[in-house]
Image (cartoon, rainbow, N blue to C red; front, side):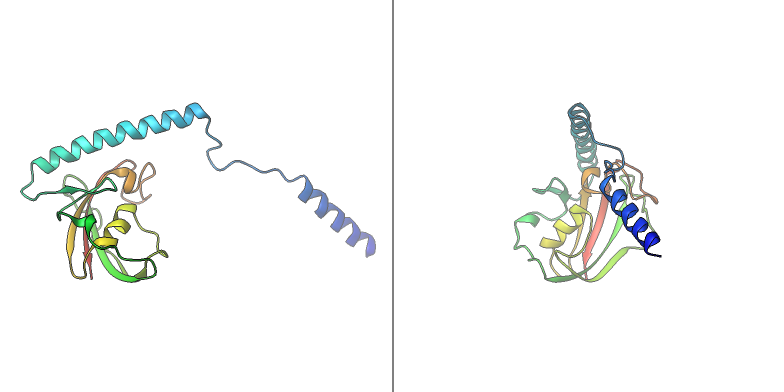
Length: 169
């Protein structure tokens, strides 16, 4: 019995010493790969901004750029007092593509979410910092602030800019 225990401990220690670490899925990107990726995102962002500006020009509602690189339907929106971490907010939002087709039948809704402790789209989380209770705003969001190069793995493909109709409950 002691031999089996000794062999088990010895094999366990030898396995842990020789364990190899592996790079994350997709491997390590070289400097050239990072530069290509950076350039691709820069070009994509430029194209999306042009497309979004054309869409805005055809609308009766005015949209205003924010510091985080999305547009909002309320002037001076991100100049308001900012909600602090650890405060709570309830909200819901609907997602649309730029053909104004609703992506999901039901709105995405969160009750009593606490800032600093929830994971949301960057633009939505930023807008929630400035929205007033009961207010509704429309966000025009480039793909880099939405679901990015992977999509949401359900109905939203990769590199899709979104229209988000956000309401603080």
